[in-house]
Image 1 (cartoon, one colour):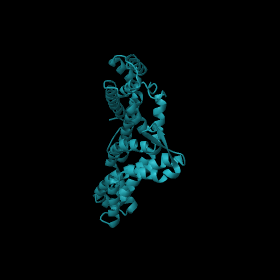
Image 2 (cartoon, rainbow, N blue to C red; image 1 turned 120 degrees about the vertical axis):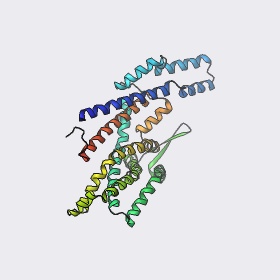
Image 3 (cartoon, rainbow, N blue to C red; image 1 turned 90 degrees about the vertical axis):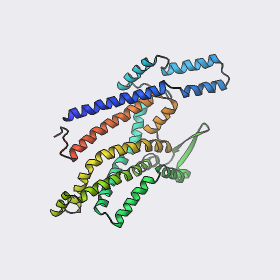
Image 4 (cartoon, rainbow, N blue to C red; image 1 turned 135 degrees about the horizontal axis):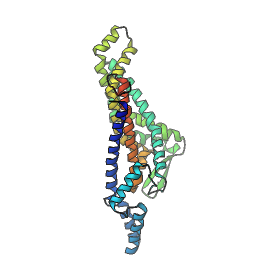
Length: 328
């Protein structure tokens, strides 16, 4: 299969996934009861508004969101706007959606991308090292730390960091009577980038390490590894050989494992540290039924997934010469 055809196939699958996901989001928030409107109606009724005033509230609400039209017409408009990147403005804030989502992606990427790179490097190096020194006290200690890392709740560590630092570096701002956000007033780079990056790294390392160690042990005892040793290869040459072979199945596992773990950890970390990243923006959009933000956020995630799949295929081609994507 040629490389161009492979990319076209991935893009076609991505478009189908985007259409399916956007359709589900649209139907979930247009063909169901609008809890935001019901809340406003209940509040107005509690304040003594009559039926005429309540009807005006409904009409204004529907007109502002464009939901006073037939459902099919809304669906066609929304889908065409999403795929042509005409995302409009946020229902909740009135800000341009592309700017809001773009800033959120940059905020999330600032700490997630370095965390992924750091986690992969640490996990691969430690995984190969322990595989080459199996059945030792040091290897057992590393394995115990990895299993412990899988069980330690990262959000508890984040909350502990905020608690310890709260007296000198953090300020709690009350919004209404029930919600709070925590904003760093000192050393913002530490609390908005470094600490979230370390927490994400802590989430990813144990899972990747367990896979790296398991696959590396398969190749440490392989005949090709013995051949490397027989030719006079040192520990570095053996480790390089093992890592190159173990990395082939790890490419897909790391990709899927990373997406699965980030899907949860990003929401928690951004809510905990009040980061206006993609997770927190999407979370707030769900609660306010901000359809432009929700649909554009879903589309952005799918785009990253498609790009990740293409990079994964390229990684296969580089690591395993037997896999031909048309790039050679």
